[in-house]
Amino acid sequence: MRTKSTKSTKRRASGTPAASTFARAGLAPGLLGALVLLAGFVLVDGEGFTIIRYAVSILALILCVFVIQVKTWWWLVLLAPIAVLWSPVVVLPFEGEGWLAAQFIAALTFVIVGIRNKVPVRPE
Image (cartoon, rainbow, N blue to C red; front, side, top):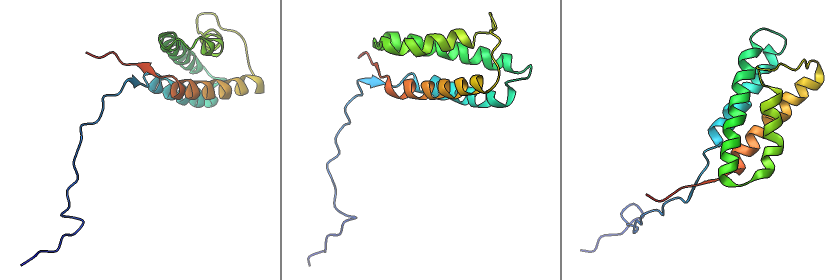
């Protein structure tokens, strides 16, 4: 007797997926930096903002390293000022709505740079 074939019994040939040639290594620091900047809206006038400054400055420098690896130098025009303006070593006295707008623009920059940059993976 002949059995009826259903979709659940059909088998497809499975292939080995190709190895990825790039990695989005800047995505994690980019998203984390944006999250820290958005948390900074609450702490902008308090003592806890120093921690925000440290985190943002360090994450901006990490993204600068990834941007240099990928050779997309134009992102340094946005990331280097973020690293300097949020630096806790030399505190620049910014406040008000302009500073809040700068925080939002920096958060967008972190997300865009994290998504757009692809670091090449070396075959091992």
